[in-house]
Image (cartoon, rainbow, N blue to C red):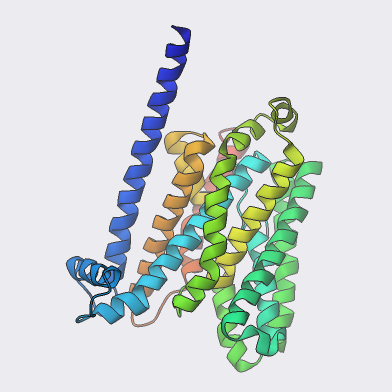
Length: 352
């Protein structure tokens, strides 16, 4: 009887998780379809779906298919992957640091990734061009993100309070931005145009080559991180308690650092510094459905994809034919939200 009583709540929880994830998947498909129809040349949703079906079935293109398949589809997929990677990384960092105010942009991980990417662009010469350059930029962004994540983690282990992490993030961002400033001063006019991508964040110019350079690394992280959901739930109790539950905390934390740096680095290398996605989405999911990482991680990935597709659609249509950098929009959303979280933390309303 006791075993039945224990199984039923678990089954109900899994069913509830499935309903939430199914709803988020449906919302993602709807907003992606609408996003591919928005732009300087509006395209009806049924024409977008028709173009996708003809592409999947390898049928000849018709009408506006080229606009959908060559311009808008890779951009929407990149927005979905980058948003998912940043949001899932934010959720993992919050669980690992046991601090809901941690986010790749706030603690300097995005700035470190951007510094690595810009270093290759400015100093790499011919190695920064073509397919090799795309993978080189991604690798350098990953290395920069990995170093900054490891540095913040070491600081967080010494003093795990909010003020230490935020001040460390301010210092790392300042150092990274100083390095970016030096490289910007050294850059040529052509390189300066490219550097605006990494300083303000943008999906403009996204094509299949850029998507294919970043997608494997983000997909790898998104596939691997949810496998650590139970371990992250244990880490919420503290490292000692997680160890008593049978988890090897040090190897676990090293894997999580590498995977979050990989996802963040690939996203920054492709889209530039886009802040607050990793703060907004996981916290909203946590407020709505609780802190269980078995739901939080996949739901954050889907929510991040929805948020960034929507933000990019607004960015490229609000001031058409020009484009608003997407990092500006996410900062306008995330800045007030972050201030609200700080006020709640001061009043004791935020819990890890």
